[in-house]
Length: 511
Image 1 (tube, rainbow, N blue to C red):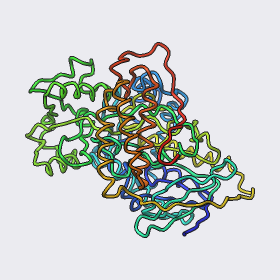
Image 2 (cartoon, one colour; image 1 turned 90 degrees about the vertical axis):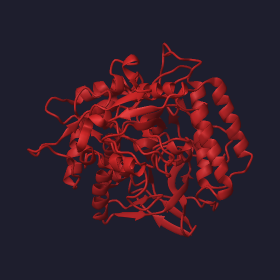
Image 3 (spheres, rainbow, N blue to C red; image 1 turned 90 degrees about the horizontal axis):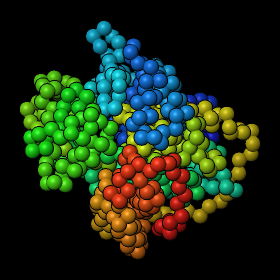
Image 4 (spheres, rainbow, N blue to C red; image 1 turned 120 degrees about the vertical axis):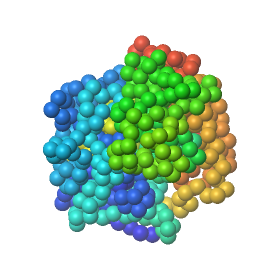
């Protein structure tokens, strides 16, 4: 077994985790990543951009107002204000460490517009490769920090607890299958989202809800986990994950067609630029009528390959030319608004545990995330987490770690379990997806119980089961429709709606 000691252990190597690591100067930091450093997770494949009020006609107050509208009544205003007010300074720091954003001919930052934004405030890099550029800059900065050690290809299994205090993590090295223990008085969850529990998703293979499951098993309070955002426009092909057709295409004038006719103007005043949940359900409704929905982005013209090189490459791989062809689209699980409940500094309800990025629930996104706020949230709240850790931990106090018994399990779904993972994903898509009901969710829980009776062993499938159960149980408890949560049996907003704290007590495979 491999044993390490650190001041801070960070699970996840995306924008949130690395932003936290950069703020922990003079502390011994270990970053654990499930994939190769800088290669896995959602950050490197994020296309859309970073929303930030840095334009001459924009203000943090306007950005906050748009965020609150998109959040459909459940955003935490204090955290939204922190996001929008601290965002510009964090972006400038990101530029200082080497991030290169697209600029106008006179050298000024170039801003695009996306759905539900009242201003052009979306920063991009290389057109539609924003996440890749942010990750590149952060990885390069981390590699220059002697106080930060990165352990790659490590699947974190669970948190370690000492007298009710999180005292580290243990996991398994994917290649060697060695057990690894990292003891630390502060642990940061920054391990992304849950999209892979759905049949159709834009998320990478790493996004199976590990952080949610790990925190739930440690007794952390979760919040708003029923709110899952389905991106309206994934390229409808046979590949998995589905390639994302960035929202910026619609910001540049692309429109949605069903049987050759636009339908979004009849659904919402902002048409294709309506909030994502509205557009996604609009497409879903057309699909339920047997219609194929197409995105017409031909208005972008011959500049498409230069303006959106990543999307253009996806289309070419599918045998399509977006300059001339209509593009088949489908909604796909894309982002989780809920997560581990945290305060404005990223502190969870478990002493010694912080969370930031998509795995956390700051309340910024409410019931529905405003486009391109996710990378900004990772940067802003990653920095806030590191500052809070520096202020809260008593570094002079003796730190004791209990001895633990470790169980070595297969890290990923084994061949014989693959069919159960496929069944889980299909069930969640059909029964707990864009449209839900008490009947469908009860059916989903029955399928999940059947999978548990098959005695799953691999870490990934066990985490997928726990995550699927958490989302389904929480969704049953919210008896209304709001944002990313829509129920046919409760189609209206509840008169008095609040954020939804949730503690998982299900008898899952780990509990």
